[in-house]
Image (cartoon, rainbow, N blue to C red; front, side, top):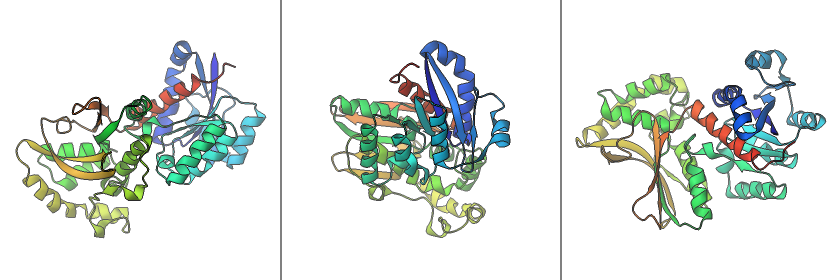
Length: 359
């Protein structure tokens, strides 16, 4: 039997879903993988809850009642005092500031699993320094959910690269949010602002939909894959088509954008009116190895194509290689949502446990 001790940073949608999945699957994981997952500390931006016994279904109430303000050093001292081993820090935040703590965690015995994309999209120097630190302390860093939520996109690209396969192009619908928006807009008789508001109300977009429409999140995912095959780029070098007009950009408030989102209708209605009957709009990210270009853009696709036939909030990725030629490896499925993302995080936890010692 192996026991892994988790410090979970972030108990929002993904973090909460992860806790509940661990609770539901605890017995099955013990039976199938011989791994006991102990959620030792739960942390949000303000308070930490130190869990002395196995986490229970009352964890939310316990967190509010018994959690108190903390410093990272206090959490590190706690796990040392309790002599906890096989430590894994799970970053389920979206904080750029928090990833600066990774090196300190690694030095103090933590492996890292991250749903947060930030660490892999900061400067190339930070990216490389982090991996030097991991190697120095013999620690693992897994982040499969950074691209494609629970889909095995990063693992596939890593395995191809490690096997000496030459990846020539990666093309995909990276955003489940934008997939839903353009699938719906292309197929239904609704204005763009109606579809956008529907997506926001259903929780498919960020609270500020401009984060999705800016294309920056897709740009980050594209950069992560590029770095996996040793293409040295910075986020600033990714060509990103921003779908938000300047006067409605981030300098104005979220409420101002939402109140005026109907101003997007004319532009997108023009695009839609120019489509042929067998065409749809799709938002894609594309990496071309030969040119070294990374681009995020809105394109037209045939309805019968893999991208054109997508439904709901599905994501789809085409990975082209020298051996496979013009027939890409296609990975497709649910590309967004707390449940699939947290399931991917849980899978990463099990993968790390496979290389740890029994205690």
